[in-house]
Amino acid sequence: MKPFDYTRADDVDTAIATVAEAPRATFLGGGTNLVDHLHLGITAPELLVDVSRLPLDTIEELPDGGLRVGAAVRNSDLAADERVRRRFPVLSRALLSGASGQLRNLATTAGNLLQRTRCVYFQDVTTPCNKREPGSGCSALEGYQRQQAIFGASPHCIAVHPSDMAVGMLCLDATVLVHGPDGERTIALDDFHRLPGDAPQQDTVLQHGELVTAVDLPATGFAARSTYRKVRDRASFAFALVSVAAALDLREDGTIDDVRIACGGVAHKPWRARRAEDVLRGARAGEDTFRAAADAALQEADPLEGNAFKVPMLHNTMVRTLHDLVSAEGGAQ
Image: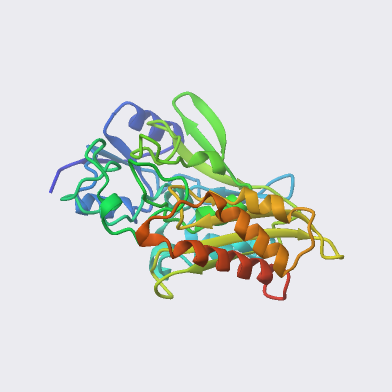
């Protein structure tokens, strides 16, 4: 047992100041990922600043018809919210596909975004891992590769981001509200998580002491016709081998006016399939169009020997998800 100090913050400013002043301090929300890392010896903070009781647990209407989701909103509450189910169904479905009911009751919005990879080598402190110990090497390069990335990897890290919720939010053009020692800033979710590059230990663009306070979901023409499909080894409590979040703004004549596609289980961050979107935008919805879009999305894929199966799996999942959206299966719940 490595001892650490614990304090409960009374307000956002105090929480930020306390962490910013201590290089080895970190925020504690639901704790569903951080506590595991304490047990495994992956991290050893000297101070935990509990932010779970700050007034950041509401879902509020925005003037444009969107929603502001507080950082401390529980995953189960967000998935069950009637406004989310009706106006942003992809998010509700993504949340319900993650973890278990018990974990969703505890996990928070910010914690879900900030959870770390479940790469077996990252979680095994007896093996080299550049994400856990920069410069030590990446064991997965010559090891177990089934869960690893096919997009955006580097020689330093081939791990994937585990979140389902983040993939659904990326499909919705979400933005992350952050408070820190230097004030407030808003970050597009697509810019929030990083690719590994030569610094895989940095999962996000957050600076020390910055606290996520909310996520904004804007009102768009495509959000209501959206869905999420996840392929995994078992029906519950399993991370995605691949997943697809998709949203369409479809005209009455079947032409796709606008589209968003995001993928999970395939990169160090939730992966936006922009090449697929370019093929779909302005085209008629149908099998040939969907397959052409999936072909375009996978042009960037660079699989390893141990995860090459993800390429056809993602292709088929993307095509099936798009079909769902133009049938009775897509849209609001």
